[in-house]
Image (cartoon, rainbow, N blue to C red; front, side, top):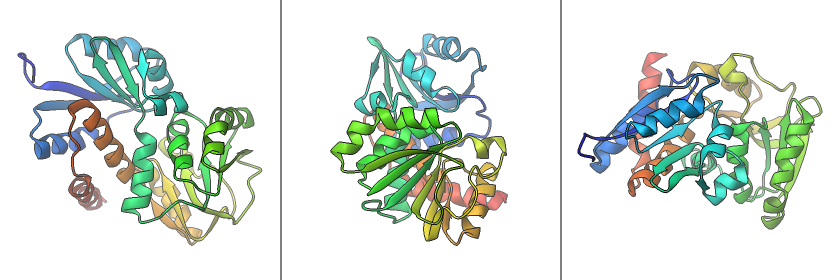
Length: 284
């Protein structure tokens, strides 16, 4: 806590009105006895950096970064974690005196939610990651580190998928993972054990970005979004005979990693996730 009051943090993005991050971090703070406030910081699409700079200049300690600014946050960070360097995208900034520190907790949060909360080990499986933007870039390294047998990155434009695969090729080789790129149209059918939707299709209400049966029956389909935005994708997964999961668990798990980076203590995610599930279910 500073002399001027509790330490300030925020989620910076556009849009942010829907974000559950303030609720999550408030519960983390209460659970761990940390004196802080966490708010929403709406950044104009052409003014991410000046908006966050003003927030930092006002005495804030850090922020999470959501769509569509994770690449800009990467460029703004003077120092970065190895996983942020691998992703080329940043979702967590800490405003240190010696310069902003950039990290990416998305991948660790996603993998922890899948393997721990959804009880789905990833080792030896066939994975499909949809998208090649900041969200997909943020999780690819951690998905590879979980050692699936095969991981396909599929995107509307092949060049972006190829670029993302290329930047992770050595990492995949080190983990004995067959990594490949595809367009959404060229995906083979009925072969993947786990599908992760890292596109903005759900947020934009654009529907499911793939056609046909790409998930095996009994497989797992995960959308990085949650709430009403994810429902169309979750319904589609269920129609494939697979298990649907939204991004709420990923959100809570990546938030815990960011909280530890900022405060030096790791909160217990289970009660926070359970409470949010009850809250969102009650709204439906």
